[in-house]
Every structure is written in C-alpha cells, then in structure tokens.
Length: 126
Length: 219
Image (cartoon, rainbow over all chains, first blue to last red; front, side, top):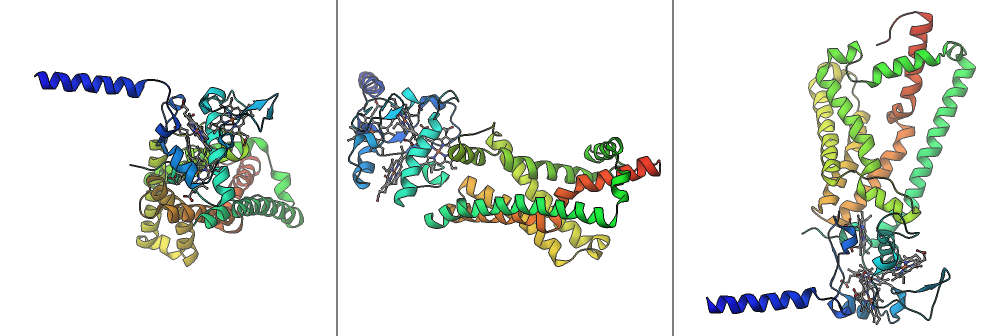
C-alpha cells in the first residue's frame, strides 16, 4: 500500500512538472496546438532541435519571426511565443494558424526540396 | 516522389483546370453556334418556364415516370451523382489545399461523411459495371469506352480513399489520386462525361418543346 502511495505521489509530481509552463525547445516533439481542438488531423511529429540541426537552420527567426509596422523585422525574433499567440486559429487573422504552419513548413520543404510535403507525411495515421 | 508530387499538384493541376474550363466553354460555345446555324427553332421554342419545369422534374427523385419504373436505378443514380459532385468539392484535404494556396476556404465535410460518400461512389460504379455486364439490354449499347469511363470515374475515389487512410504506399496513392482526378476533370468536356455540361440544355430544350409546342409532359 505504502509503495503504491509513494508511486502515485511520484507520478503526480511528474505530471505537475510536465504540465508546468516554460517549455524549452528541446521539449518540442509534437505539434498539437490547443487552439485547433477538436483537431481534424493527427498531431505533427516535429523534433525541434534535431529538425533544425538536420536542416542546417541556424537563425531562430527563420520560423520565430517578428514584424514591425507590418514589415518583417529581420533582426528581431519571437522566440518563446507560440505561433498561436499571433496567428488566430479562426478566420480573424490575415494568416490564420493553419495557413501559418502549412505555408512556413511546406513552403521551406518545397523550396529546399527536402522534408515532407504531402498531407499524410506530416499528419501520420497511427 | 516529391518532385512528381510537386509537378502533379502544381503545373499539371493548373493545366487540368485550364483544359476543363476552356474545354467546357469551347464545347458549349460550339454547340450554341451549331444550333444557330442548323437548328434555329431551338432558340424559338426555348421557354424559361417549361425549361425549369422539366429540369425540376428530372432533378427530384421519383418525379418522373421513368424514375418510378426503375426505383433501384433511380436511388443509385441520385446517390451516385450527389456524392460524386459534393465530396470532391467539400472534402477537407481539398479545402485545406485551396486555403493554403489562395487564402480562401469554405466549410468542409466531416471526414467520416466524406469517407462514406466516397464508398457510395465506388459502390455505385461497381453497380453500373455489374449492370452493364449482366443485363442484355445494357450490354447491347455498351462499348469499351463505357468501361473506360467507369474506371476513370472510380479511380480518383478509390485512390483517394486509400491515400486518406494511408493504406498501401501512401506517396504513390496520393500521386495516383491527383493524376486520376485531373484525368477525369479533363475528360469531362471531351468525352461522354460532357453530359454534365449539356444535360441542363438538353432538358431545357426537350422541356420547352414538350411544354410550349406539344403541350405535353416530358417526365
């Protein structure tokens, strides 16, 4: 009984730690923005650091971009913010969240000729 | 396979839509010009009221005698056409692709419903195939091109189903799905599938002649 309780307590602590905010980029493995719920496609496997190392992407603001007065600010970034913080999932954003992901991810893959471009390659079925 | 995918979903898609729209306009214009030259009465008889009356009677299930005489065929045909036209226009994958490219979208069907509609189209194609093979009266008017057209129509739905579920080779299925869909689109103005373009005109004319000239029903 005692062992079970200890185990349960340990699990609870783990769960709290996992749920706590302040994700670092190494923790990003799967893209499943809560703004999409209920999602119609499977979450997208995206191993943040491994992806950017394999793709040789050095500048963080290639993806975490920042804008000033409607123009891309090439020396600025938005590291630490979720895409959903600026791109609304509904239609009320010039580039809504799904298009933001699709255009950024597939756009680079198509241009570089590397990385997945077909729906099911990014949204795999179990 | 990515090069092939990008080609068939890019330039080839533009070409297919261009041929579909251009070919359709050309076929309709050519038909109108031909009628002007050879069959001027067509335009004299044309009556909006009788045209719409006829189209209505042939667009609602069981509103014509012919349909009441063949209940199974009527149900299958209606379901087939409904699913054939609506599922490609409203399936999520197509809406998403359009949105990504043009920033414009419309509501999509729930996946399960689109899936069911796809199976209805395939099942109906099998039904039509079986009918052509088994009924003497149908066999009589069947040629190789009828089977080819059935296959052409069924192919995008079969491959779409396989690609969506990621059965078999996903990349290959998706490419085959796109290519077969484009082939079907291009075939619409240039094969017997052109009844999609002409059916309203044919009905309008027959309806007008029966209604305004013969004072009879055409349903």
